[in-house]
Image (cartoon, rainbow, N blue to C red; front, side, top):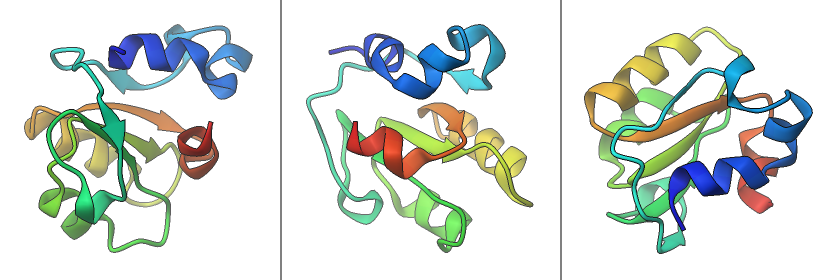
Length: 102
């Protein structure tokens, strides 16, 4: 499943009326083959970050192709920029953990 296809299935994205109202970056719209914790993720995997983690360091250490990021918080914008620079697809959500569980 492509990252863009996954996003269309998330309830938070649907509640927002689609991607237009949410910050996101599809990068190369990676094919996702699975999911894993941020520190254990690799190419082709989806992961998430939630506020309060050692955010920037955790994202730098991750090999995930796509990440669900927090939309709010002091580091939200910096994390979005960091993921974009690393070539990761991402979307900023109110509750990344819940979206990951979906």
